[in-house]
Image (tube, rainbow, N blue to C red; front, side, top):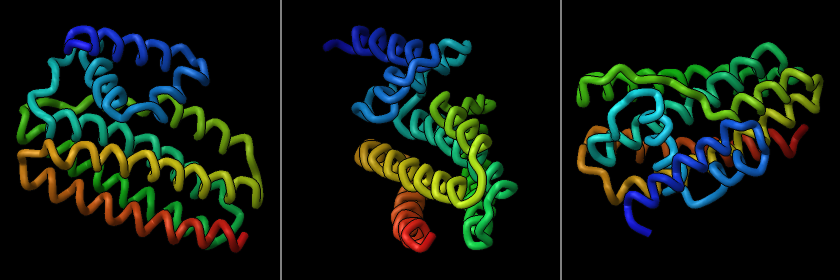
Length: 195
């Protein structure tokens, strides 16, 4: 498929994901991560932004939005968690993801002279809504499972980006995020099995 045809496909995937249908949102999140990368750029373009200048720009835009979903989920879990260790984990994740999101936003401003447009993915906001309707241990379990899945989606996004990276600062952040997310998956799986 040529580049133009791919861009049209990406926009259609994004439009499908924004329509509220579960199938389209799952396709964007679970499908080829190239589609996800392109669809975020397409989404930004639909909002009047210029196309990404390079892979690092594209990655930063995508990850700012990816992090926004987890920040919102963790914020809800801080107030909803019934287990103290889950509440502590949610608080730490919220602070860490927000700090990374702020750092990436600052990189976008400094490197690309662009004000980031943070747009959490519809699937992530649906997860926040689902958590709001859950209580007790079920809420703790839902939060932990969702964060694990979120990280498991993020790691392949990072893996796809790293070979294309040209900016050491962005590459270093991506490698750090991957290592942290891998460690957090193990930690959160342990918490989940103990509930």
